[in-house]
Length: 184
Image (cartoon, rainbow, N blue to C red):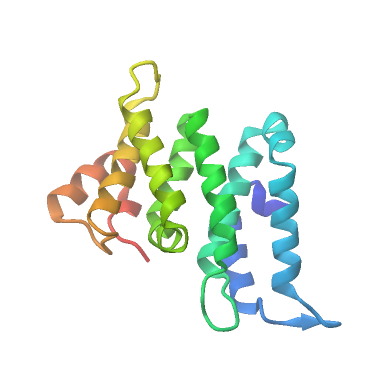
């Protein structure tokens, strides 16, 4: 689908689905159909990754956007999605690429706090892997990738601020872009 080809389309699709996720057609909630598609992508993630890293990363981005935008009837996040998100993030850290680390950084910036709240132990394990990768002298990550990981750690340590302190924000935005200045 188009939502796995382009990040903006995936973001807009997730927002639209979030608004109509409670609708039913013939007794089937739209949310359930979307979750089934995401589950199928997750089950075939290795095949998808070998076929197209871009499609694989856009699938991760879409999952994170759905997590951020689609809620249960009571308004809560669909916390069961936290586990596959953290599994994807761990896979990115195991074989880091600049594009993969960028997706991880962008999505953690937006949903990290909720993921941490949902699965604190698994999130703590993820942060240990981030730290290990950052100091791995065999890692060939570029400066922007290391900056993305540093931003993940600092956001966590600052308890997920909606805005970063001025000098800190300027530092990250000069490398990663203005999207890191605020969380929506």
